[in-house]
Image 1: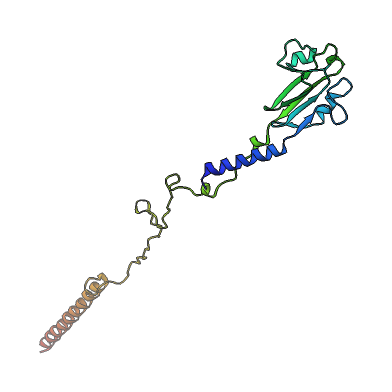
Image 2: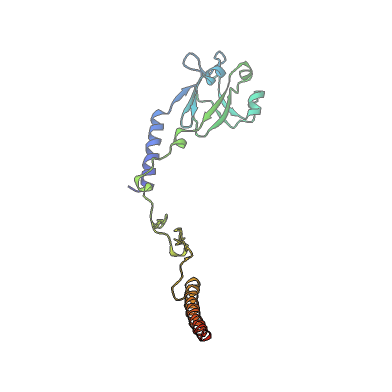
Length: 216
């Protein structure tokens, strides 16, 4: 079922319900009427009028019904009527929200209390909100593009958070045998000691030989 059809059905049903519940109000009733003996303002304030309801004025020939402005209502002035009726059984539909003012045009009757102010409320039809259709909850891909969030970050924005691993470099105190200064010095010292020992032995032999010659 499409949305327009659903809205039409809901509105149509609301109108039917309103028509079924529309009320015809007998002005001044049930214990009074459109006359100078009824407290018409008290009666009107005890009612709730809505758009779609109707006012029913029932009166004898010595009365009539005159709809007037607020100013003429306050001053009981029937000479500039909006509408006037004198059929004895007048039904006036309330088609719009707002206030309307009615008086009796017979001289002196309005000042004796034969006047009524009707405050019509908005119809319940105007406040009906159609129920959401299941089709309304389905969003078209063209109306609402689907947003896809990738679980892997983009290479352009990828940040390497891994900390680089550094291997500590500990200076070695050892030197290769061929390049170590200590080893080289030891070798030189050994060679020097050997040469010195040979020289001392040679000198000793020579001295011994000279001593032997001098002893002869």
